[in-house]
Image 1 (cartoon, one colour):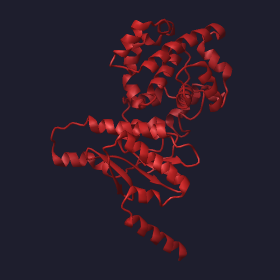
Image 2 (image 1 turned 30 degrees about the vertical axis):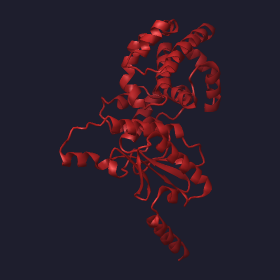
Image 3 (image 1 turned 120 degrees about the horizontal axis):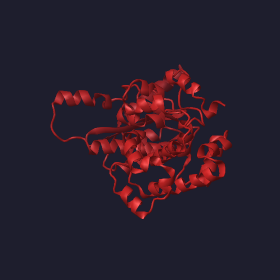
Length: 333
């Protein structure tokens, strides 16, 4: 009976709440801190957003379109950026439990504020680039329907990829590249540069530009990139087909020169990686930070996971996992 009354009182409280501030105050202080940070970063990225309570949680609209939702729970923070936000960041979200259109960020782990910021930026960009031409109202309503309420989402990158056409960039990457060992130094360098360029963006963006990157960076020939001069940096900064970020471009050139040194000392970049394998994620992060430029924790984690040095690229029940095992990635040795 006491439990029933508590539930009824909670429902009454949720119904009576009118502001996000009131919603946040219903949680313990530690949870309030996390919710306030998420709210602040959303409003910092989209100060024009309309804030309200919808479906019993803080909801944000921008240009009359749903932007994101978030919610507090006992053991996690729920974040909703359906459907495009979850699709665009499927690889980044794969390590988190997902539910009805939400991703769950555990409260006993650091909340990935940078990732949340990227998702908010992505949803804003979608709204900013949405066509303004008038269309049939019924078609608009049908297309917008999934955005109006959190929807079912795949639980991981493997499940997400399985829903796509075989020619989709994510499906091709998942089925043929993600987690598979690379035995060519130029290709290892390519993967490192792509992971660095993904920082602050979605992996979808990088996959769609990967051929442009290859062309712009001389097929990732390490010797050629290491020899880039100012005119090459200017050329890359003017290339709309890639990510025009000066720091990322300079990091590619610097890291190419470092790899040349590693090749001279160890025979190949792959040999250097194998020499240090196995290491924990934290140990790898420290090593990469000491050795290369622009290699933060997530960049290092994804580079090593995507090249088979760390596990986690595929679920064991994923059909591709058997192919991965046959390829003998380093994490299985």
